[in-house]
Image (tube, rainbow, N blue to C red):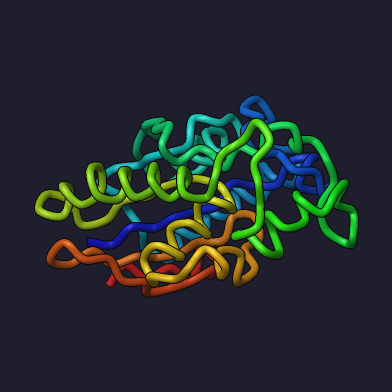
Length: 207
């Protein structure tokens, strides 16, 4: 069985390099809608059809999932285990280009082992809920589904790759993941393997 993990389209906070984290109501901007539409067309051109579609319940992910399902079919089912990492009091603050407001939130992205959450989640808590989703939601589908789509967030896609590759938290943020990129995970015999990483949806292969 193949599982496609798709990052949501761009939001104004993405464009402004502000940490979104657990802010649930942020929606796609006009560019994000166009990205979602392009992702849908890409998946369609790649011949993708999905037996089930899951989405983070956050608006930016659900909107992306709704756009994609409008082209490739299916109805997105929200699942709270795959919402974005909550960064607590740091949400809304800048990131990138030296814009962090203090060394602690800088560590969250550059040295995750040293990060101390302030009203947010630990990386261990994020791993726990993503593992629960993979083990208790996705694995049981192997016998009945050929392909599954999961629309989520940059942090969740990083968590999935980290778990599947068996990496330590220090390598959590390795690799760039643009909006509406896709990872393809193979599930065979109860084991996950990474097949494609951060590809354009048109390049997705379910073979």
